[in-house]
Structure formats: C-alpha cells, structure tokens
Length: 120
Image (cartoon, rainbow, N blue to C red; front, side):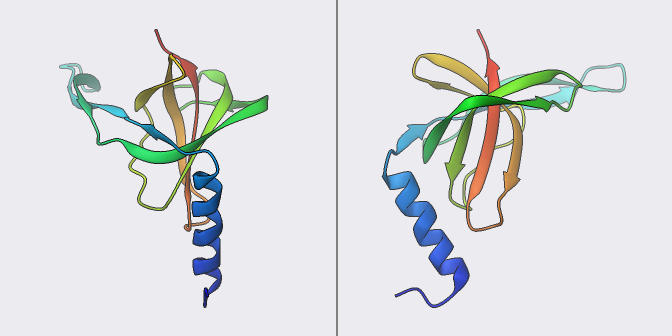
C-alpha cells in the first residue's frame, strides 16, 4: 500500500507504461568544437534500451525547438524518473525515425519526452 503521494504517482505511471510498453533505444551524438566557436555533432552513441510508453498525439502540438524551428509534436514518450533522454536524441519507432525536441520532468515522479520530427 503506497504511503506517500509520490509513491502513488509512481505506481500510476508504472501501470500506465505497463498497459502498452515498448523498448526504445535512444541514440545520442557527442559534441565537439566546430573550429568557429560553436559545437557540432560528432560520434553517435546508442544508449541502453529503455522501457517506456509511446503516446500518439491525435492533435499534434506545435512547439518551437531550441534552434528556432516550429514543429508538430505527434508522439510523447512517458517513462519513470530514471529515463535517460536529452534534446537531440533520436530513436526509431514503428519504422520511423524521431528526434527528441523537449525533455522535462512532470512533476518528478515520471519523465516525459516530447518528440516530433521524422528523420530520414
């Protein structure tokens, strides 16, 4: 029996994920100096597969990315607070490649990662 609100929320998140779990492998690029004072992607590294729930957005949400592009978020990844995801990570789901455009804790008892862009 949960004793705190946080424990209850974590149980709810786990049950939500368990209703339709998938494993995604996020790919992250290390960044190196570009010689002009900025950074550029260098080597792509695959992270360990993570158990999450991918939620399709029936009404895609417009978001502005860090680099100023306006994109439509059509998927949201829901995971627990140990989800390792960062803006710029990519993954493949249902044969399509996606890029993470936003990562945030909501409100700390699970982690959501909004993503939108079909890559490739």
